[in-house]
Image 1: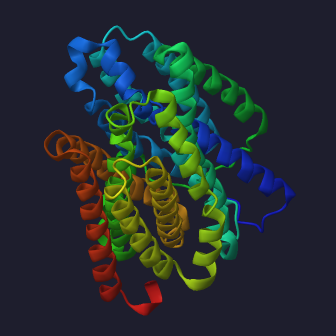
Image 2: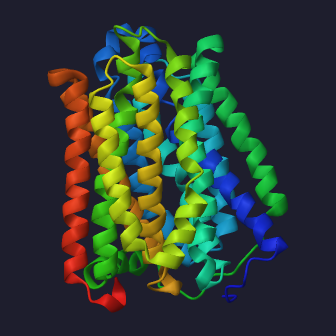
Length: 397
């Protein structure tokens, strides 16, 4: 495998392309969130199932992370990306013609599986960057990923408001088709290092989790942080649909614009992790994320408060994510896809659990219950991070 190089003009262009790939692909699992009230109205007989759709998508993503993403250590990532985009294009087109909400939920699983394209892009960025610039490079691609997560809600809300929810998935399918041609024309081919055969490749991830304390620490912290993130975003549309807001999908989606401000912190978080050490940045990020749920709890009737909380939440989660990844990519260069897989499988299982717990809390305790779930998740992240730091030697912190 080629050795990492300092970012040149060519590699900077590749980083921007990778950020685009990450953002456009991961967006597909978040289009659904501002559409929940629209889907509830479109399928009134299945309305009781609406809250499980985001969890189904995230569960699919975690499944794809485990079974597909590790292949990046064995097969050229460009090849994997092209195949996944092709499958995702077809699945999104099928989603647009779903006859029932249960079909939407069922198709959400393969949409999640195939959207793991993003998790080929992030290790690629680490691979083409010098060690002293790795955090910044990962931050650049992750900023694209987070913009995709957040702006997906805005785009879906606007399109659904004016053309219906099915149009969201037609546009998404056409976008992925265009991305296929861009990747085929511009993404370089890099041959991976020799890796075990597929069954051994999967088995080795448990070995990595068991033998790498830094990986365990970051994976559990990342899962708890993403659970908090998903708890908020999965239920925001239902909060805004009720009193006193009575807002539709477009208004719910526009909150993604506020959250996009948090994506701007990604390159700065990466630089800070490179210079000051990632553990310190993670500690600050957990505190910032916890404060966002205090803001949300006080803002159940305030659009301004919700908007401020969104910026704070996304900045905190993004800073923690970049710093966690900076730690794991420094462990074993030949296993970056598998390290990335372990980390993100844990994160998205946490996200699916956060969405499910938030839906349960919403049903029994309303918005304050959702905020309590978010605070509990950040408390778990903080406790694990503190315990993990105490157990690690200074050389591997």
